Image 1 (cartoon, rainbow, N blue to C red):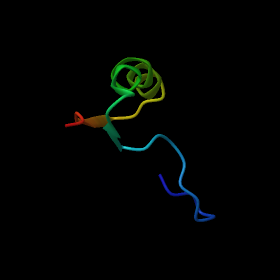
Image 2 (cartoon, rainbow, N blue to C red):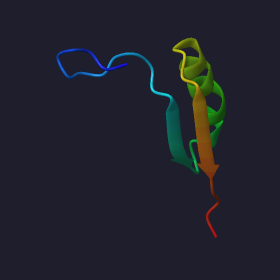
Image 3 (tube, rainbow, N blue to C red):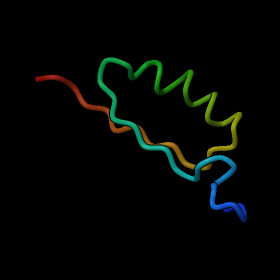
Length: 50
């Protein structure tokens, strides 16, 4: 939501992350944190080396 002074407030509607070695953190701890902060959509692009 935009405020009158030009700043944006509230949770983002979408968060996108690219993950390799941090996938276990991204898929569990961060998801819980984002849910508790009312993020509507969370996408993790997971890739593997090699």
